[in-house]
Amino acid sequence: MAMSTSFAVLDGYARLRQQVAVMLELARAGEWDALIDRQTGYLQLADRIQQLDKEAVLDHDSLQRKAELLEAILSDDLAIREQLMARRSELGQLMDSSRRQRDLHRSYGKQATSVVDAADKFGPGTL
Image (tube, rainbow, N blue to C red; front, side, top):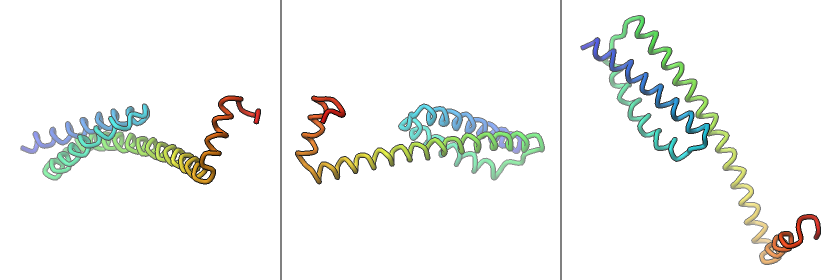
């Protein structure tokens, strides 16, 4: 039982490593919906591994392999988090811009729209 459990644990960590590598590529490509879809499977797999890991007795080589896999997983996880932080910042800037545009429209109403229309007709810097 211990041998099959240890194999299952290492296999699970290897699959988790593959999953997080795919998630990192999705984050780098800006595929946010696909990243979120993958996250569910990642979390389910991580929960399954956690249960198996409690029962497994790993020898020295298996522990070494597990440590290598965990290091790679954590490295990719950190890179994903950095991508997400950059995306959050980008969305914050978009929200600020939208908020300023809304406030301008509320303050000046139709006048703000006519200024934008005139700039479109005559080009920038001619007004």
